[in-house]
Image (tube, rainbow, N blue to C red):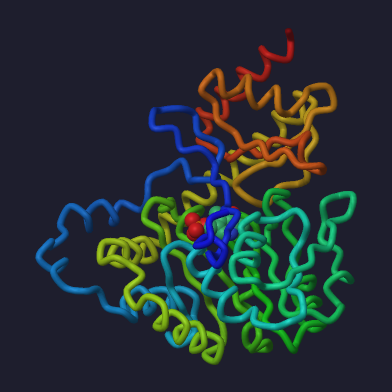
Length: 351
Ligand SMILES: *Cc1c(COP(=O)(O)O)cnc(C)c1O
């Protein structure tokens, strides 16, 4: 190592799923197979590019107001950023500043560990149980903060509000972050608990249910106190995180509630049908409440299956790792895309 490298901050980066630059059946990064709300295309077509001379509104007032109205909270309870990865990174930086370890599951969104390492935050990862469920008692001990996704990824399992509240009641002296990237496919948001828990932060994204992964929009909803701390950190780092097109498109997407609900329902319907098809083929999987299924087959090696699918331009996600190496994470695509997946699997397995 060169002398000047010694004091450089080292990072072991998160490895995102592949983004092949040609058309494939893409079931590997939990994107939405449907386009964004029609109003989004209209906004882009009619965009007045002259306004790009100017900086965007640093407070992102328009989008904050739209989200506040949508969720029935005050504007000072909303924080927005460049995808929920940006929002979550800011949350780690702001809220996890204790010498005690933060807690998150051993099998979960792998970015958590990356941020913890990057920011030198101590952490512990309690093991999910045999059925890939979070064991609530593991989160009763002293800690520097708690974060978990609900539904969890890549397991797809959703825990009800009573479970989330139990973790909150046992963790009133630290910040608890619930990452709800997939909650629209699942059930009730933990936002309902905000009135009673000032230390709760709920993080969501436009990347999954709102079909806008490429626009990079995420947000956190919490108490005015926590949101103020987040904003102070943001304005100490980068005042203008979101671009003008992202802000305007985000507003349009939130306005079209009917389109949002219709798209989400289509994905849920396809998911429920896909579960039946996977079962018929002999796969086992936890009962998914997300827009993906985490599946294993007793007779087929997951890595080989992953490679065979890829050779046929069907991309799913394979993680490896001790507890997950026999699993594939399959994003729910359109009905047609899933039919192609099952046609291939049916043929492959007869061989
Ligand atoms: C997809 C995902 C995110 C990040 O999404 P963004 O595109 O950065 O908004 C965060 N958490 C989990 C669990 C996810 O699956």
